[in-house]
Image (tube, rainbow, N blue to C red; front, top):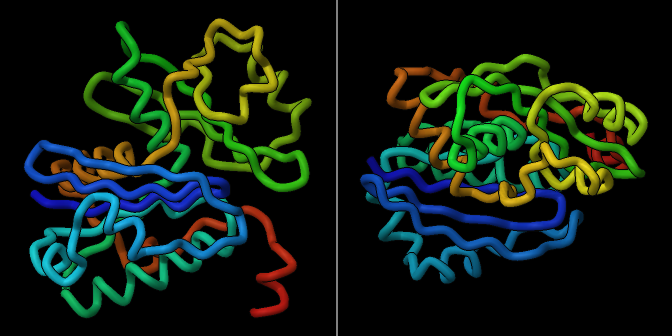
Length: 219
């Protein structure tokens, strides 16, 4: 199974290729309003677009929540490829992908993972997931939270994952080693493929939790 995955976040761009159990990935810092440099990302994995796209079983991408510009650009780019090559797209929440990645750093299950990522204007994208060694399920779907709300949630008995929690540096239940990238997106997509999950076309669209000035002007 060969899956090409992207995670274009608010402050980074990441690409990963999952090829029969082997994962090769690359992540680079980026501006929240900057459109992804697709040729650059492909080149960092030494991939020739025309060759790799003809050999894929599917595409995966972190469909949010996150920067409107980044999410829209990624969705449009991958939809065009999927249509031209007749391959499926697997949309994966970046919060859920981070929670899924946490299992590689844990010794005991089940566990509740609370994920938080930075959003605009001092806000945070936050959601919680129940994780076992073999599966993941949503406890609280993604939402926008304030720093005060994060602090209240952090006091509960759960594991914290994501850059949004870094303001709470005294928390010993924060897994600082778990960082957003396309590798966890590819891994979770493959997990859902193996489970036989089906994604309708509407599910491929990005997750937007808040309106942006750019979006309003161009809607």
